[in-house]
Image 1: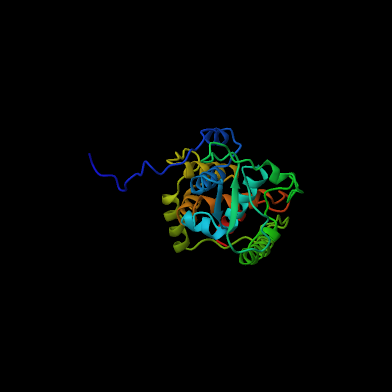
Image 2: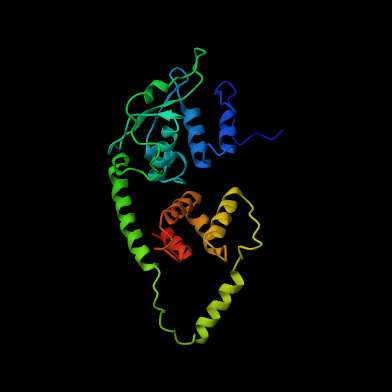
Length: 257
């Protein structure tokens, strides 16, 4: 028998309920939320059902696949859905304790966090997933403010303009040659066959945005990761259709900010 790349310690394990998988399959948990919740679950202390976490630490644990800002959004969703509880973070950069609902404790009981939600909730459940700046670390808030400014400029740029742009002069030979090269490299959305979960999500997003080609979004997937793509897509969805007519172009530009 070939040696495994690492040795599995059968004396070090945790109980992980299959109902978490059911919640994901039933759409009660997003894939990223499910992933982070399982990670918190396996790092928790079995004596008290707590784990020590930080937005920056979790981002690092996931090899920066999820940004600190995106981790913050995930944690807020998990908290609102009462999978976890942690003290309200207001400009804090340090780590904090996270209580996990129904965690199987070493004394045979299960962690109860219901009483944590008897106080005044941090936010109304009707509020969207957009993160409140009061719960974002300072440096993330600065980045988020810059993104909002950039997005506003992009909305204005891609807004519908009733006046038709002036006709361009005919393409020269170099432009035509470059266009022909791009045509040969294209991967049409119609007929595209995803080979992974990430490609499947990109394909669905491309169809929703009315894209004709998969080349750019697949390149962005390789360069930025799925989390970045979904963040940009959610930003597109928040813009009124009368403001942004070319959502595909707006989406593409967001990914390069």
